[in-house]
Length: 107
Image (cartoon, rainbow, N blue to C red; front, top):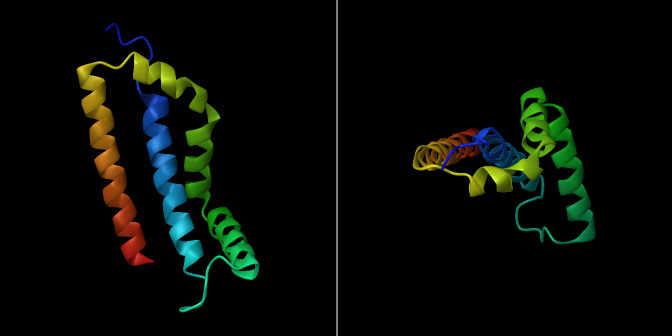
């Protein structure tokens, strides 16, 4: 294919998904051990912690904004994918999963 679109938005989406996953994991840790996380009080606690954790990390805020700013272009990027771009996205996905595990392990 002609590679009209590139893969910038797709890679930013992967990065943003990693950032939000890590924030979500950290937010879930706010529920006391042994308690049901699905109670209204704990869901509210998780939501508040998610917001607090995200807003206290300007890097994660920037990653989330970049991920969703032009998310509508991802489908065009995927339809126009070359082998090289597919490999590039695959490498990015593996790197983001590794980063997520490292961040979660450190949490």
